[in-house]
Length: 294
Length: 308
Image 1 (tube, one colour):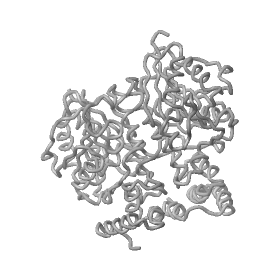
Image 2: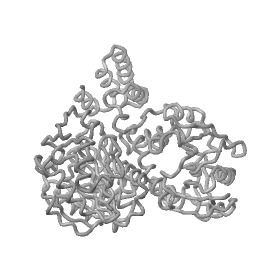
Image 3: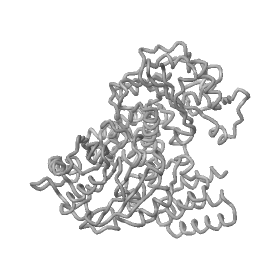
Image 4: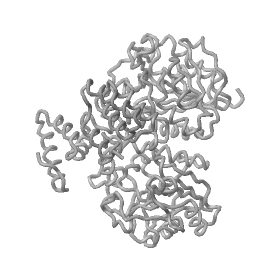
């Protein structure tokens, strides 16, 4: 059995095993389940089990579409993490956490998630969280956007959401409309200094009047844990991240002081726009910010 | 700081019981000698093997050693060795990391509860006093206490050790429940009473009495949330309901409670609705969501009138 490391090998593995299922070969499903336990074939086997609804599929237990894109860098981050001995499940379960953490923030500002008619998940990746958001509020209320076209295509095809491809230049993003909630998880924790405020200004344009922007940053505690010292503006950037799809100079790892973020928000939209700050919130690590547009 | 060693022992997987006990003893000795990284590695080995799992895990957590769950989960991650719900996770074939799965499952319950309450127009954040009834050893309590603050949370369970574990570790208030609903007296009433997977276990003889009793614990304007095994769960279990819409068999994951009092029960929607019709005062609103919790148990949300 070859190891599907390239897209063509992945596809060939899927075709071969799907053919075995179609032919009714004895033990075909069991062989696929066994392949899910082996790192090299884990994702191909998982996706075949999910697509065919074989015994042991996650979808039945999770109540949502559990297919994972082969080029999902976030999944591969889980798969390489020391705390994860079961990365498929841990990746899928992490969305419950994000959902609970997001809902608590929104309830804290008296704007419960279920009352929001339109939600843009920006920098949505390959849909680790999107699948949970869709289950919570339905696909018709959800739009996703990411700079990686493959990620947007996967989310559209798999979860039935609307989606558009973002742009490397913040000023060039083709916002199709404005949204009652724009949720930007772990983008500002990756941006370099030269584009940080530009992205904030661009995304702000996508927030409807009276709508909310929820974003996250690496703040003081994340900087302390990483042993990072912020500069005199309250900023630090390193050109490395878990993404293999985006230039590390444009998407690395950044840390920002509370004062830095407050200043950026005040400059853009006025101090009153910031209605809630929750340090060390998402994943007990990233700071959360809630902005409201007048 | 021993990250490579932690990775290596995790990848190597469980040890034979004898070696696991030796790893646990080695971890305890290294800890006593002040070698935290060495202790973390030995205890992680012991935590991968069932016989020594919780002893090692709880030592890692209480000492805050490398590899502990608490720092990244943001809550107390210790697990009571008497916790039958953890035992359920541990015995489940498809779940290869029961510690993490048990702890992460609380995020699921929290998000499912919050969505349910928002649907009824009563967001979780709005409740000053929440009773988690049949709370067990706090699989979910730790998450609820983090979300609301422990001062707003009270737990109750029929197993005294379970209540003590939650009050000690999560800082919540708690009281021991009773085997029979008639024996139970509420210390106060609560804006939200949350009863996850109790009515999925009750025999016919006590089902109605427990519902009526729990309804009494709901403050005016408050909400009762409870779950049942409904049509989907009955179909999956291959169970046929009786003429009334009820089925019970004396078997459950609990070792602490008599299976005749706490087995596994299934109820039709019609059965539950008939029971709700008997409640006084009548709920002002009832929401029903089939296969809601764990994509398996039906959820019922009852709202109580403001002035009753």
